[in-house]
Length: 371
Length: 262
Image (cartoon, rainbow over all chains, first blue to last red; front, side):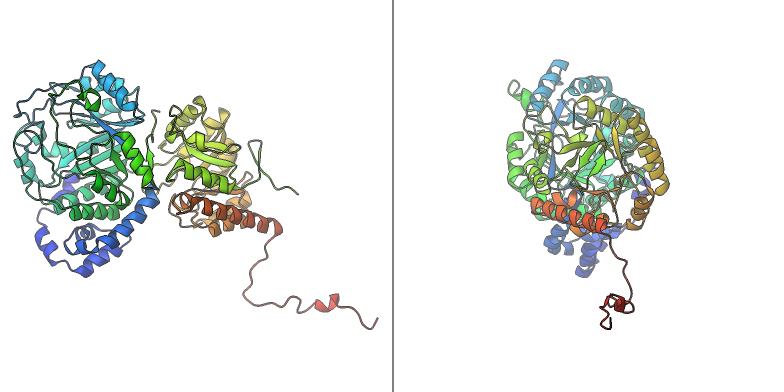
């Protein structure tokens, strides 16, 4: 089985006509429904539904409260290597960018981990660029062994692996996988991934499923808004998440959908822009479609916007983020590093915690344990 | 006459058990536990950070309230057993454990078979085991045979606030099961809790309804009152409902009248 089979059933679907012809009444019915079909998700993402955001938001808020309470889980990303063999037009790690690259030594991994753990963070997301030569699985596993001493939950956002490789990572202590398809549009995917291992659309699409088959606890999938038609990408993201929920009922499935931010290297511009209101519509539509899925909001968004988005369905926030190798812990001793993208919300863990408490949310620092 | 619930040798007066998840802050959770005068609170082991100076949930449980660790997040009996052992090793709470084994993230319904397996292991290791279960008589009997100190059937799915949708099955457990029956999950209103107590449940466990309320302490107090009222009604004895109006003694009232001829 693969989600690709479901995806292919929409290959001739007239998305543009559907958006054009949908009525306000159809959008209202979709908002009012208790359970949502794929067509209803499209209606929630349609232009007419854009005028129903407050009603949709109220419903999304209630659903989020019911499933997650007044809590937001915090995590910090840690980049351990930025070597990359891909040419992804939208990414600062693009191999054509001739800037100094680095990967952390075991001692540096330890130093960065200790520094992040000292902020009270217990959930970490470990990232690398896509280079099996420079950051092979053995290197990642060794890094996990070090990191495991400091955190109770470890997710990875690395190149797509085989099933057996995911099993190895899980045995090493990883309990979560984040993997972005970036766009579900195969033509756009092929265009923006000029070359490199990431160009293999299907191998990437099935990565989440391979990890879930190995019983990974948390799967976070995502798209990069602005590469293709955002409505289509969010629609397929919702379908992909629901597919995984149904196929793997023990896994916690969550979704992310950051908007493209500037990055070092070639001045890539988004093929479509997504306004704040449209981003809100994406969050609400996915909350209604996936009532119990986690939703992460990226530090690519401004602090003000992130705060306002909280009650609409957000369940996870990153804090103390840096997109440079070594993160904030090692930044001071290396100014030459490259950022994968620019972050807009640069607040510390303490600042984010304080903001959440003021807004009536409990920042959840620990929600798992190595068993 | 005092009316205590006794589990694992502990005498419990207040039959409202509370969960500790989903609160906006630990301070609000503590206020709610105090308002409920809770004597038993369940805490997810996955959330406990004994190393933290500021975020250790155990620091916010009022004195005198027994901490019952739960195995939230366990997908198999083996994971539940390991979580319970970790709780014991780290000194989290008492030797009580609420077993939760869930293989379904959508409805959060318990896996009764895995729950039974975990119960068998943990009872032998000396835990006071309270398994969260789907209300099924055969399984409840097996859990009792395995040494469960109570059974905790769900009222409706966790966090749903839909009330005691399983009431007929819970009623059967109350009649047939020899250990305390404690309804856990789905109770959305104090009247739901009252209804459970009226039919003879030994206690109820409430979390989401209180934690996501705009006034958790206020609602915790209301639940406490409802649990108490339901328990008193059960002990007093409730009369069966009738389809017709009935005067107090239409046929035999004369027997109690004074015989004026005498």
